[in-house]
Amino acid sequence: NAGVTQTPKFQVLKTGQSMTLQCAQDMNHNSMYWYRQDPGMGLRLIYYSASEGTTDKGEVPNGYNVSRLNKREFSLRLESAAPSQTSVYFCASCFVAGGLAKNIQYFGAGTRLSVL
Amino acid sequence: AQSVTQLDSQVPVFEEAPVELRCNYSSSVSVYLFWYVQYPNQGLQLLLKYLSGSTLVESINGFEAEFNKSQTSFHLRKPSVHISDTAEYFCAVTSPGGTSYGKLTFGQGTILTVHP
Image (cartoon, rainbow over all chains, first blue to last red; front, side, top):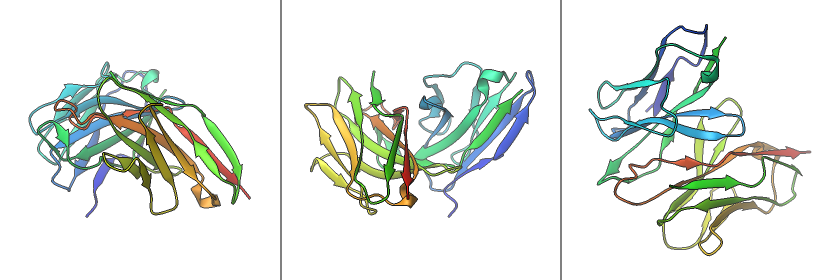
């Protein structure tokens, strides 16, 4: 039981390049989330997917797109990377019913992204 | 809208000393409260949570937190810290309402450094 798996663990991009961060969970959770972590700012929600086939913006969605490929997988795409997107990205999942979380969020190990 | 303020960005303490990490929240609705811990180069792990019932909650490794509704606080305490407690600690809040979808709002984080 791997929990939440993120790939890659590290990535260096040049300004303007694109990339996709992958996330998969094997806990049969219906809700998934992408956060970014910056020093002194905690974690901020980028996008979330309450269930398969739905996605919604979080606090800081600009510059990102997401795809909920199936129940297990939720990817985050940077179409044209900018230095301001240098950050650590975390994927998380939990089970939500009736709009209410029924358990805690489980987090992946993170992707450390540098944009030069 | 909800917000979380962690009042100390860094807390240095000596081993076996007591520690308190402070967390205040703002919300117009009822809340669930969490403390997550992040060890270096790892993802976030749940330390403890308050959902309902007893306002004092405990973790398996000796931490405790008390929900104080009148002071809108959820401070984390440990009577005697170990070197292995060195990590970054995040306070987070969500609402049990029907549209929260488990989304968490995090504080800025507190880096606890335990010195020998």
